[in-house]
Length: 353
Image (tube, rainbow, N blue to C red; front, side):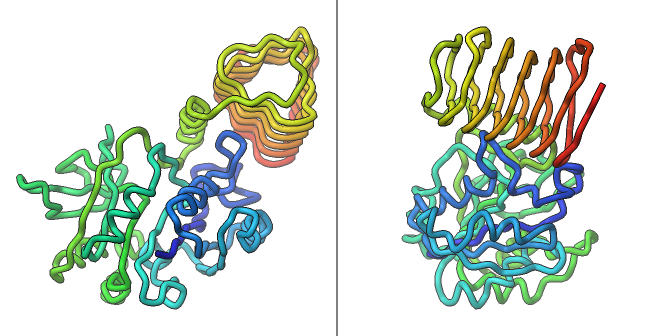
């Protein structure tokens, strides 16, 4: 089985974070969100992976993942000139896939459950496709699967105004090459895209068989800043602790701290939290809970909770930051104490109060 990771799209709802790179490289617990998909594929035995890149700094994707050898996989890159829909992106993989079954994962989806059992199920099945479904509170935001009384899928609709079920089609699709013939007959939706839900619907109308499985645990579609912060909290709650720094400071609950990071004795870290390498934390810093701090970050006299700070950031003097995402190379410097500040800062932003 081969793998495909969709890494395109403009990420307009996440600007300014996506002005300087694709949203799938935004970090969740100090790891690009698309890396979770790649590692899940690898752990499920999928070693040949194509990454579909768009026109938002695709060179950054290539620079980070390279040929895949450092992740234990073999990576190819396929360019999608414009965001024309998931089905269009899948159609571009025809030559890469060949005659094999394949797994497609959206690079901005984060989920708790391993893909290994689902991959084994599909490998041994005769189905033309298998999709993963998850119960959600607001199904109108997603593609929705409607089941009959026997539990068989009878209809799949993209973002219905009046959903007939609460089962969202999450961004994990197990497919056979039969899907390419189906996509050839698709027409663009009102959004001007070739929708994957339309492909599944047409597959069923052409007597194709679609299996499904329900995802237990959590799943996040990280389309907004709040979705990313929520995913960050969920991931931090489920990772194992490690400490590679001095231990003279106060720690509470689950935390991960990288090499060569120094934390002052008068600082406190409350987990779940992750701090990268080569950071200087202190004096008088309060971190956590639910905080991800990247590499080479300097923090002084500040309080930060429920936030993500990327690499090479600097924050000095008294400020309380909450529910914020601060991109690489940003600085916040001021002289007066400020409470409960919230930021969404793109790369190399600088705020001086």
